[in-house]
Length: 246
Image (cartoon, rainbow, N blue to C red):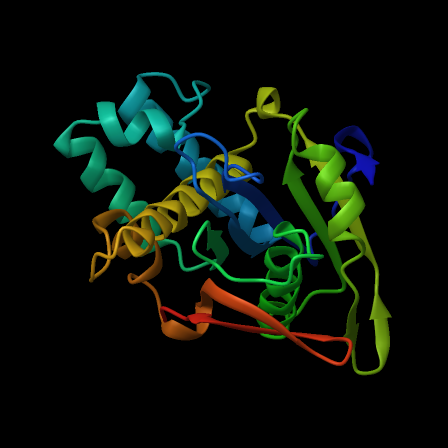
């Protein structure tokens, strides 16, 4: 892992912002856990997404530097703010992904439940990265005192090859205090995935409005989502079964 101050992405770098949702130990009323985020080319991020997000902050918070947080937004936002957020996700067609588990997910007793989440996210990122013309990758996790040790221990390296050439991947932890727009967007994506995890574990059908506004508003090839129902093992390989929505 490198520090956020060391991260100097070039224009042809694929930026991957990742945030978590729920609790990795399925504690309290957060009986689900997952990762979600976005993939976007650095030049598009800097020149298009960042200005658009700052404009959204200005419209909703009255200050383009005041951060937006999904957990607060979903309970306090006006109808106008909700519509503006939906337009943002529909207008900007970056890749988005998420994988979640719940306390109803079955898995081998010797497995840490975060591991299949991490491995599935890696597969999703490899699939989405194949659609972009990058020369390097920066994988940026939102840092937290509780989750950082798990990410560093269990996520490991993201290995991607292009035409037989191994692509350099910088792994970075960045704090919420940085107010990085990409991490705030990842927060909304992860939150939408968490809303679906809650719905599935409660036995409800259909998709939530939050999920629909984030994942159903762009072409299908730009989306990867998995809610893991079960994890089994065949020899040394993990086999995952679940719902792939889109």
